[in-house]
Image (cartoon, rainbow, N blue to C red):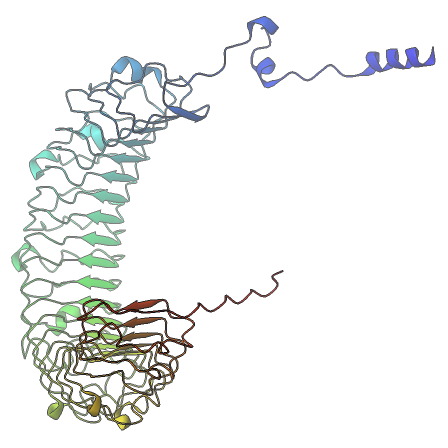
Amino acid sequence: MRLSLLLLLLLLTSPPPTPSMEDAAFPHLGESSRPPPRTCPPRCSCPRADTVHCNGLDLQVFPDNITRAAQHLSLQNNQLQELPYNELSRLSSLRTLNLHNNLISSEGLPDEAFESLTQLQHIYVAHNKLSVAPQFLPRSLRVVDLAANQVTEIFPLTFGEKPALRSVYLHNNQLSNAGLPPDAFHGSEAVTTLSLSSNRLSYLPPSLPPSLERLHLQNNLISKVPRGALSRQTHLRELYLQHNQLTDSGLDATTFSKLHHLEYLDLSHNQLASVPAGLPRALAVLHLGRNRIRWVEASRLRGARGLRYLLLQHNQLGATGLPAGALRPLRGLHTLHLYGNRLDRVPPMLPRRLRALVLPHNHVTTLGARDLAGMPGLAELNLAYNRLVSARVHRRAFRPLRALRSLDLAGNQLTRVPGGLPGSLHTLRLQRNQLRALEPELLASLDQLRELSLAHNRLRIGDIGPGTWHELQALQVLDLSHNELSFVPPDLPEALEELHLQGNRISHVGSEAFLSTPRLRALFLRANRLHMTSIAPEAFLGLLHLSVVDTAGNPEQVLVRLPPRAPRQPQAGGP
């Protein structure tokens, strides 16, 4: 009796059962009339109630049963040729529409196609067949991608009157200046990224959004920047104008002067004969490679005192092309690229804080005792493929460079290793010279050297003096390929991990050849004079880390037996 009363009391005082999500959404429906489960177009995926993915299905017709609740619709990588207005107009909740890589033409895109999509924020129609841009796009848009079509014309309301618009991508189309109206971005004052690269523009378009931070105009036919065309873009940080037809007359002293936040300017692959005037103080990277610059005027660079990277490769700078001190005002300059000019010496009075000087493929014949002394912080020096001979490289030329990590002297006419190399070096490249001797005293101070390339010289075993490798205790990579060695050099450094000996005259590898290199991982012996039994069976004993032995291209196939691999060391804290 007490139990019955207790059960009755519980029933009277318990709260009613909580309705399910379906009951809450449809309280008037009974158990037998609940809504059917959410549907998804055939072969598509719908990971969420508001998301529909129909990618890569070779669809030729727009799906007709997409839920009205869809906010994100992706139809990329199909074969759609048109967008039916009736189907699109149903999807008024769409925020993202991805039509990338289809076959949609302008004829298949009605003018009113997007007028019902009042919440659309991102639209991607790149890689289609559009010949003109849509006349009307929703005011709510933030990102529009129409790249890689055949667009020749933009309309005022394609991108105009879009206060939330941030990014517009129009690269790889066929736009000329006539197809871009002056009011194309009227009322769209928040655009920060605009890509118009790889079109047919002949001059920089006027009336671009003043809010721009990144402007891509490379690969056009631009020969002129009209006066004042960039006077309002004071927030611009990156400007890409490479691969155009700009000449000195197409720029003036005011072209870049108002761009107070400009950090990156690429003017490479044009027809400039001089450094532009009026460069802004904030500029950090200036790319002037592959122009026709013969002379660098110091006054042109004084305004760009914040410059960190100056690239002048493949111009026509000769003996007087960089006057003494022309770059000295650039006190913060980190990297100077002068690859492929006609300089016959290291330019004098370069900025003291320079960290990287890249001078390959010039006509440099001499290095004097003081030529490099003004750059004590230099970490990388590349003088490859010049005309240096040992007799004209002073024995103290490199001594002031106490921070030097990388030195490239490949492709010169050196017959001996230069003297006075700094002990800070990690990488030394001397390949493709005419080295005939390695003297131990010239390498004695290089106890931090990790990589040494001596390939394509004329070294023989007798040219390598005893104790040559003794001080190179940190050396990990040694390239002696394509010399005239008849056997493996003895007493190689203990730290060595990679040894290149291909293209020599080695006919025998003895049992003690690698006793001094227990850490060796890779050995290259191809294209020597080895025969089937040329390598002693004991040659690789003790090389527990050796995993690569290349002996291809010898007179006979060489039998190589690798030693058992070294066991992996257990990690601390393991079982």
